[in-house]
Length: 457
Image 1 (tube, rainbow, N blue to C red):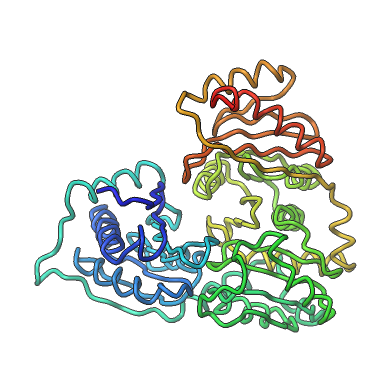
Image 2 (cartoon, rainbow, N blue to C red; image 1 turned 120 degrees about the vertical axis):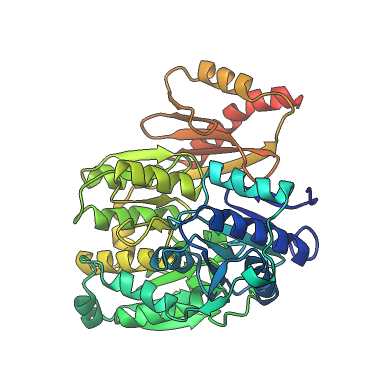
């Protein structure tokens, strides 16, 4: 069944509420997911959570009924975060988890995120099997096989305890230090976990946008250009650090004590710097993440491995390589000691511990790290195969190291460019990083040339 405007990916669906995303669409996909999860035989329990979006309560009721309709036991954890939902799947040994959240998308969007029995988002084969049920017909339960609903109101508390139990997060020393933290939850689900966690870590917390009603006061993606209010709030409160989370709390962005957003790639770099003091092993990130993470890995005596873009790709590679830390350059820190999912509460605890150990302002710690400029561009995807584009680029840059896991990434000692088709839109992304913005922009321009030629521009 096609639904115009509905974006269907391996691990979820998303769309604008009342347009592509309607109660009927949510019911169909939720039922298909429940039937797929229960058929795996491990359990019939599916964990159900939602973020604070205005449409969340409505879709939550729809999804609950849909899961019951295929015989699943619904473990309802209510208003929560995506990493909390992933952890709850593991805790309950569930068949899967369904998280209602459009992450950093604008206010008019919502989405279903499908979590497999391992607590990871669905991988390609799992997603295909689930979507096949949408097309072929969903095996609904008869009246005597409908699933029950149970509630779990301790999922967030267990998540906090997991973070506090990390052996290298010194809760007592942090409590004595009493860091002043400015926190921006963007009226998302962060309000249900971040203040409580920071309080347990002894922080003196000042909050803005802490009402979890989904009425985002700004564009909800926690990138530097959206954090002006938090930058001012850090300066007004004299905070040691500012934390911003996206609406479902898997991404953490940081504002330093000077009131400047440091860029979301630095979240993972700082977390890596701390973890490698205590754990030895590889670090994994995606092909479009800044070199600053690689620099942090090398400085900590480790190697950096890169995976295709997408959280599940990074998580699977981390599992294969027994990585000690990893994630994505969008502020998503993955610490396998907690779980294999991006987790802003984990990121916040690691950054505070690093600040404690460094015993100097965060701005000075950040100034130690190299600075790079990233330039991102996109253009309409051409009708023809991109293989010709990749071939032309490899010929144009014969001295570059090529990686073909996900489109084409060409890298040199201090710069790189990544050309890849988007998994969610009919576009090609071109991302480059270099020591200066002019050099990064030049790389983007050169890399666009064969694409523009193919598109007839």
